[in-house]
Structures are given as structure tokens and as C-alpha cells.
Length: 114
Image 1 (cartoon, rainbow, N blue to C red):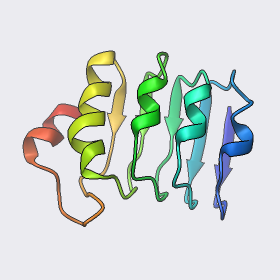
Image 2: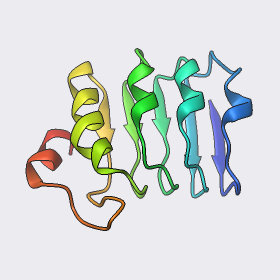
Image 3: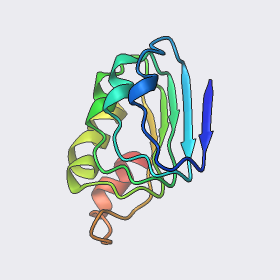
């Protein structure tokens, strides 16, 4: 488990070599890029209150069972395509109901993962 709190700037690039890391916690930081986690064996990612928009790298984590991305500036693609794809894989996904433009995603999307 690795916990990073209040890191600015937050860059996971150098952590990508921790490919056996099971749990990553990064909160209240300026993290905006999840691509380095695609090479890890994460089972859980708690990434609340950062600047993340794209959740695409999470799809490459076959063992991911729980992810929390509440309080991030998630893109519409993350809400409408990525999160619904994570749920059938058995990943418990938690996300705040606001997108990068400050609007709530459609209620049918929220029901799928909250």
C-alpha cells in the first residue's frame, strides 16, 4: 500500500516500477494522469479529490476490485463509457455526480455505479 496526501505536483510516473503495488491512495493532490497505474497490479485505487479526467488506464487493471474517484473532474467519456465498463468486471466504483463541465451525468448512468 502506498499513500500520498496533499502532493503537488502529483506524478505517478516514477511509481510505475512498483508493479506489484496492490493498493494506491492519492487524495487531495493535483494528480491528473492515471496512465502509470496501467503497469501495476492494483486491486484498489482510492483517488479522491484530485484533477483526474480520464479513467481509461483503469480498464487495463484485471485485478481491480474497488476504485474511488470522487471529487475529480471526470470527463463525460469516463462517466458514460469507462465506469459502466468497470462495473460488469466486478469493480466497485465510486464517483461524484459531477463532470468536468460541472453538470451531472444522466441519472441512468448514476444508477449503474452508485
